[in-house]
Each structure stands twice: as structure tokens, then as C-alpha cells.
Length: 204
Image 1: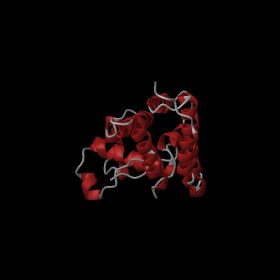
Image 2 (image 1 turned 120 degrees about the horizontal axis):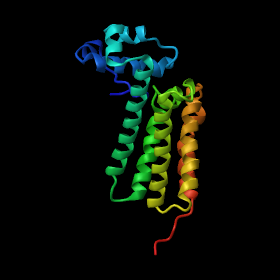
Image 3 (image 1 turned 90 degrees about the horizontal axis):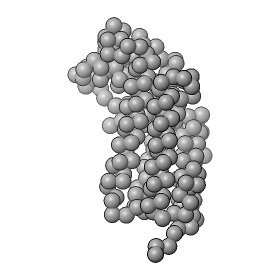
Image 4 (image 1 turned 30 degrees about the vertical axis):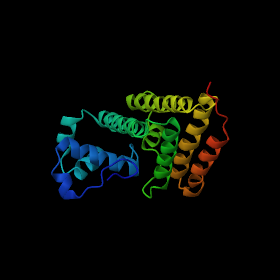
């Protein structure tokens, strides 16, 4: 099982059975998501990972290197989620859209959700930080895949629809990060209303 930020919810005994690198990544994901990438030091990560700073630096040359691996792992898992949603509904693009909206609902109603881990990290990082490029590439890829999804489902102007949907979802997660669950929980209804109202192309 994973928290909203993607960190594994495991016992200390289960964590101890994993390799040092795995333990460090699990600890970093949990601490970065709950406290932010700047607030968490390598000593806290090493302690939580049941190891030491020397071992951490042996696997990750620096804290910045660890942050890059952290965001890349999250981006890969985000890609995997959409891959799964699409592959489970190959018979109908509309079912793919509906399944994606259900995924959005699951994310926004997760009691452990405190915003998008990637967006949270991005606002803390300088524009030149290598992790920013990973995050920006993922967000663009996600947007582009939504365009393709809406085009396959024959929505008119899929680029505009993807812009609107993307901003609604991303905005909802930022709202949660700022402590406001109420407005975010209305987003699913807004998404469904937006999709229902958008004209569809008539098949030739």
C-alpha cells in the first residue's frame, strides 16, 4: 500500500529487510512529501532508513542526486498509472476517460493526500536544478497524453480541453497542499460536467 505521496506504508521490520538503497528512497519519499525537500536533511533520511550518511552518499552522491532519483521515480509511477488505466480499457476511449476521472477522484479523496509530490518539490527547487527538468518533462508528457486521450474519445478541441482539465486537477492538488480539502472535492463534479458539456465530433 502507498500513501498519497507514493511512499510505501511498511513496518520498521519490513523496511529493515530491504536493501540500503531501497530504505533510503522509501525514507526520502516519506520525509520529502511530509516536510518538503529543503526541510529534510540527509541525517534525518539516513536515520529513518536505518543506515548512516556514509551509506547514503555511497548510493547517492549528494542530496540533490537523491532528489533527482526521487522525482524520477514518482514521474515513472505516474506514467505507469496512466498506462494501466489505458490498457485496462482498450475497448473504448470513453471508458479510458471515465477511468482516468475515477483515478482523479481516488487521488483527491485520499485522506493522506497533501498535494502533488512533484509540484510540491518543484516550488522548492531553483529553475536550474536537474530535478526541475524531470518534473517539467513529466507534466508536459501528462498533458500531451490527455490531449491524445480526448482526441481518441472524439472531443472537439482536445488541446483546449486538456488545458482545462489539467489546470482543474493540478489546481485542486495545490488547494489541498494549502490546507483546503473542500474546494478540491468539488473538482470531480466539475470535471464530469466539463466533459459532458464538451461537443463531440460525429463519426463519418
